[in-house]
Image 1 (cartoon, rainbow, N blue to C red):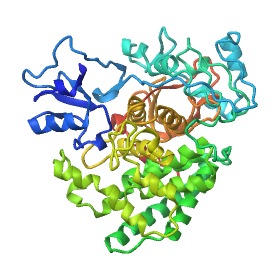
Image 2: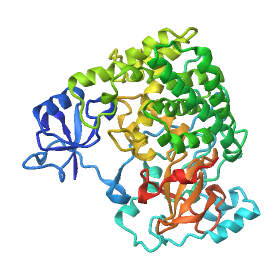
Image 3: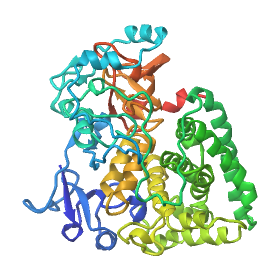
Image 4: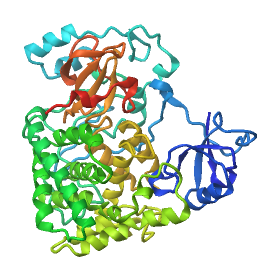
Length: 533
């Protein structure tokens, strides 16, 4: 049982499972810990307003008082290996329509379409894909809500409250940007209304300055075609980062002219197809060292900016923000960076100095754009003023600073660190959404989720028939029907020959769809074994 408690009600012996802010913003680097002393209580009260307490893992008499202002969080679907997936708390946003463009009829105002007519409106798959889907039949059990249990597994109440049901009921409008119209009575994406023939034009979000001339990007090549170029660009950026770390340690000044061309290569690749670079970054994340975190942030930031329509010049600036935001950590003691326990107040103060140290390094780089400096300076600022180093609030934080804060937190949550295990991309997005409105701007969080998808590229997912797959690329017309690489069967045994499936082309009577997101390395499956190059 999990309960939400104000920090004033916490006591020694309680097991803290989650906080009201990212763990990277606190001295408690390990996610989930037992309160052992008054010093920990003092730090919790200094940095947080509330915490989620796991009653079953608390000790002694340190149980939350019954009837207090607590909130029990229930899991949405039985997750593997004892893990739970909290309900996604996202705000509904309207389908964006550019000025001067007529708004299409909503799903609620349009006549109800039959399943047959909806399927008939779907794109017709090539003959070889039709044959593949005939061979790839769903052997799961059909349940009352339209979802399916894995083969041989009886449906449970958790299954009936499946992830798809949540997405349809609580965020039905969030993923409608490019034709993902939602049917409130549907749990299976196959029953959603047909997509328009082309993506809808993007509407300028309120936080994007009017001075930005929006650019509409279309995927020029497939992930398979772009993967090789993306791999080369990522590897060059990784080698550059290693060189940057060595130069800083040697006291050498960095050169903008050295960094810029490498970032530009990444941007060029991502403007052709962002999913390829995101795939490479996800598959390579364990191969980069402590300072490689900035590479992951850079990829997410460029994908974010591309989605918003920023021109290439500013996409390169966003890439530079991600690449450089943690360079100041090179000058911190390694024992603090790699410590796998709670930091002392003195150690935490030293850790926070990495922002100032990074700005000192940037000050010696000529021709550095002011927007890049702002993004690096403000990536730990928070909307409610609880961040550092300036305790800035709201619009005091630049757009690049707010964007960097979201991308930095997402990358930190989804990457294994010396002191914490990675969480699944889906869980990381859920956490960002829960922090929206306090730590991060809610509209910006929503746009970030749209930019990388609720099941981001590289995510491990379970299909409706129990098979395990990796998300390879998103379909721009139906974001909830991506292309996936099926790597394990319903019994969670690795396949000898992985199968690529584009879920939008499944027009069978029992279409396969994503049932839920899985944590990294669920069932002992390492998606990196199936790296596409």
